[in-house]
Image 1 (cartoon, rainbow, N blue to C red):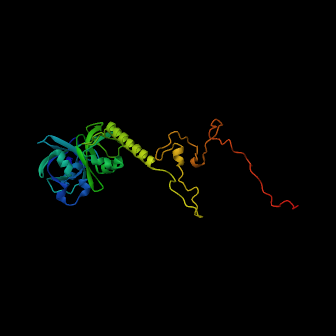
Image 2: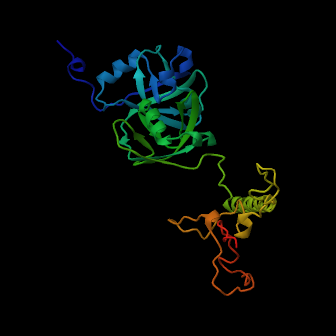
Image 3: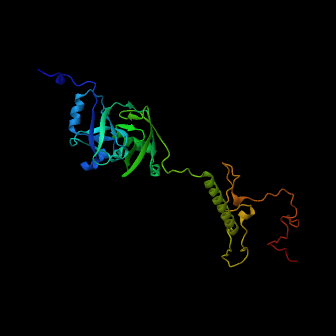
Length: 301
């Protein structure tokens, strides 16, 4: 005869057991467990869970009754020693557990996450170019999130801690195969920049640049110096005044009246005489004046 316990699985019962908790480092190099939110349980737990009518995926609530702290996690393997579980170190810190401390485990059913808000625990998180992509990649090793937990994510050989400020639709949610919106709060220790002081510093720097440009314009004189003729004469070797100074243009100062599409040739400009300034006109000048010379002399008498 077969017993009824062997023919039908146990119905209406939850998995609830107390284990001694140890960090994953006791197992050796298990970075896959340390970087995620899943634990390692003993084989007897798997035997009990298969007999119960539980909902998959397997999610568990960890409770430290001494400190009244709790968290939620998934399970990665059932290879731990009997009476022990191995969990990530960041989870032990959240539960305020020491090596070998007692923790109560019970299976739970959580709602699928729709929203989560995180707060980085260091301003170094701002150095990441795409924080949402880094977070999405790190959460692939997690099964659920619990409000007020501080999770750890490793990126570029550096561990970043993030506090879970808010989760919807509940204080603990499942993130397995879900479409979750993510938001970030300002990192711990972050200070907003003083834009007014920065603007004042920029104005002072601009004034210093203008002053230096004025000094440079006063000291600069384009095409200054003296020239030498090939024939040795000294005619016309006096230094000519700068064309830029005559036009009222100073080097280093931009032309704020410039219009897009216009081109100005400074060296080809000439003053336009409108006929009003008669003082500069030479009234003694007469075109084609003088005496001519004939190559053939007149006949002799």
